[in-house]
Image 1 (cartoon, one colour):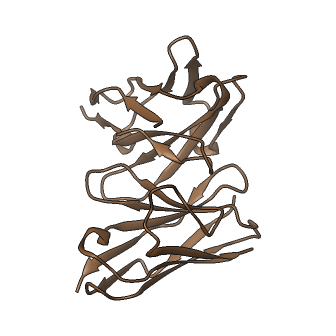
Image 2: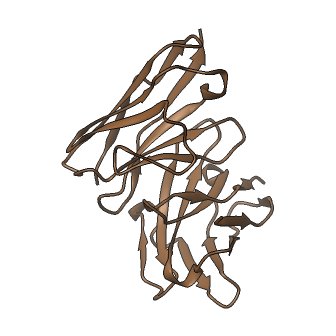
Length: 107
Length: 117
């Protein structure tokens, strides 16, 4: 199975900050990488697919990059509605696997 | 707009089975795959398996093989996930998700399953 390692597991940031989350796969997954945002009590929401493509309706402050084994999610200017937990997921092969999550908290 | 609506919360005793449903609307259910993902309290996301609604092809996570069965009913655009021999550590929110640009683009609202004696 492909293991996905996210870092950091949590971070504290202020409104307006630029935030970067990293995700590393244990083997080459090309660009089969998705990012999700989850708020308390809600289902995950897909933000990015194919490592860097924004889902429809997702604001451009979110961006993704990377290929192979190393990936990043960047939020260019953190807003109050962005405080949440973020997960990466590889869909290169079954079983699909998720990173452990990054909780973005208010500083 | 694709939408997935899941069945309501369940409380089960250890050793029992649970069957969660996931009804799709406004898209071609029979041409898509459905994944099931669960989330234990305070924990991360865990993929359980996938079923192709068109041909019934399945892929289950090794952890759940022998205990889970995923099915679909294309006449009602509904997917089902049955988990047997429930244990306390099966207490979780169970989500269905369907394909779009990736394999889990659109998610249901989740079904809470509590296993307690």
